Figure 1 (tube, rainbow, N blue to C red):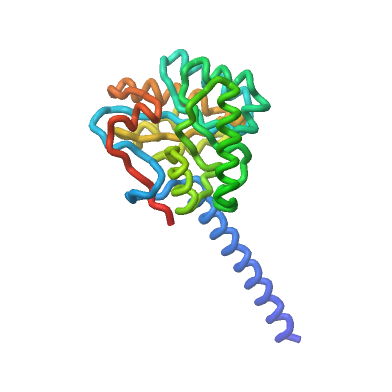
Figure 2: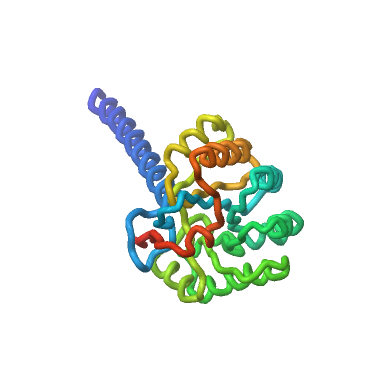
Length: 251
């Protein structure tokens, strides 16, 4: 009886330990793979940073769902006289044409965040080409062209994906800093921490989701603080031309 009970107890502990390990490693892999760009340099990678002497930073904003936060961000960019680069999902643009047109009318740069939200690493080259073409056609109907910048949906990509996007004539753009914002993030503290991390040539990425309510105020404070340090905010294309660029190697 003692052996049976003791073995049952051990099995329970082993089970919970395994579950804990699975949860931990799943979190580590997902947060690294989905949200963080790869480091160092390789000629076949996607662009993550400009290597230049000018004190310039590019704000990029991923838009795939939501509307209120995007309107607030546009108002702040207008007030601060800053142009950003919006990576827009094609399906979102079809559902929110007025907001998409407002982004374009206010002379912000627009890149594509896929037409659908399918992960490019799971698609064939033909499917990726079709997805990008659908997105480009959508932007043309909104009077924005030419499309030059592409960011794979959900940051899911591999070597062949980036090579194929580049072969199609687009620039594959990632980022050097991801603004990891939650619904309860303190705007002032977050803005200060981002300011300390940003340097010349950085590309910062924000997500414009309606549940990330601190985002507009963080952008406002970030712009004001970096301007006080002598920095200018430019579009991705302005940041990269003329400049050397840092590329993400593809694992």
